Image (cartoon, rainbow, N blue to C red; front, top):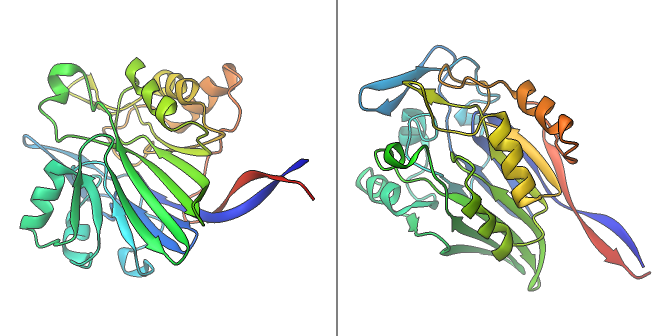
Length: 273
């Protein structure tokens, strides 16, 4: 019996935490952020951050979407362009806090999930399942002052069999209890890891290179796609620092991704032929 790779779809990194996922017959967008270079994202409490890099494509160039997965309601993850440009009927899978706000804005298909709850999309014999998993957007006291955040486990099933599993960290720090994600959802094929070492008023709010490497070792995905690195002035840790740290630890499967270029996704399966 040999192991072969079977194609399941692709991802395209647009910028910051915005990724276009094509999984089976489903098209999903994560954390829509289409501000242009020089524009400011508003983060609450009178704080904002200037964008340094244009998104790879404009919002108007997106294909029809089956769903949006939104980790939390911050201006660098769901901006004013998304608020005014997304179809109001698009399902948005997010936190309960964000869903309430989105519903007030007219997004009638917003779906708020509590940790470990799931949402499903059926497409013929395929099922795409999004499960909300915990995250912590900063130290304990600061985390409570920020919009609640979720990570996501995205499973693609065909004829009742899981063929691909993706973990999206969301804006979180690495905490030991995140290991429960790998315990509940083993065999993660790939992970989109939010990095950047975001600091506001000196407080670390997203993983720097060391925390990112710690989380990868904790979760142990087959492939790691680092995102949320170099787009905004509040992000203090460059991508290269994470690449150097994972290389130092000999962590395999780290794949930096170029903006705007689709990356094929595949899963290893047993072939008895």
